[in-house]
Image (cartoon, rainbow, N blue to C red; front, top):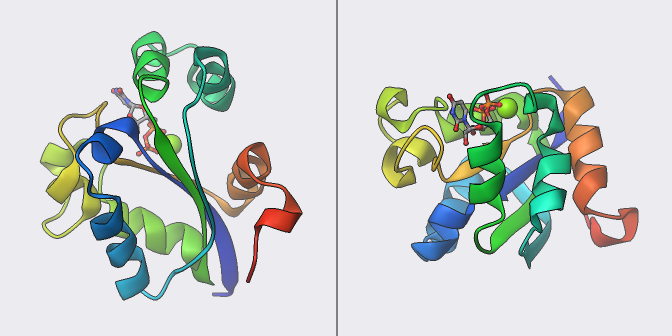
Length: 140
Ligand code: UDP
Ligand code: MG
């Protein structure tokens, strides 16, 4: 284990429900620190670029439409084992399968509208953080 950074997105469904503070509390309760954060509204083309690893999937078009449908919160979480820890706090992709007490179980609506994104590896975290933030915007 080591101190890591991971990219988190609070998706348009959760921002629209005005639960960003409740979600941030989950991160902080788990010992993760929000070391960068901003609110933005992705264009369709920015969403397509961010999710390009999924461009061959049946859900890609719908996902990109959703992710550009309203404001999101992009954030960098820092802490011990942050990548895996955030995935645990988030819960399974489909809120219906997510453990009780996870963010997706409590705030997600569907497999697509599932409240949050979190990087799935340290390597992808570095790529995803650089997509949204410059070094100057990340303050430990
Ligand atoms: N997604 C979807 N349908 C699916 C699988 C995924 O709409 O069958 C969406 C969902 O919003 C998910 C995102 O695509 O969070 C990225 O999928 P991934 O498999 O990477 O899941 P995650 O890493 O977010 O749990
Ligand atoms: Mg993923």
